[in-house]
Image 1 (cartoon, rainbow, N blue to C red):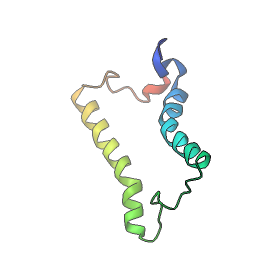
Image 2: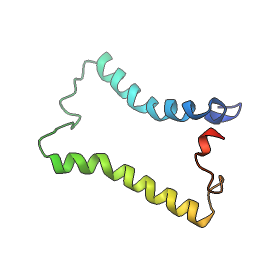
Image 3: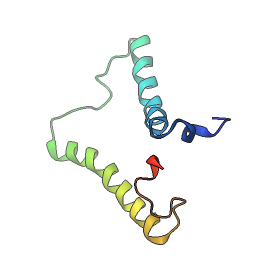
Length: 84
């Protein structure tokens, strides 16, 4: 991180750093034998499951639209900015 952050790694850096907390949590659960029953990955209610999946995607789209539309984004509307 001291030599340019994950931007120096290109698009792969963002993906790797997004997954670090989740992978760390899974590894700790396996090491300490905690199991996964209390995590809340239930599939009983399909409407709630779909809401949990689509809400972050929708929120991200709204935020990106606001940033690109208002020119507050440092990428000035270039798409896809991770390839430039």
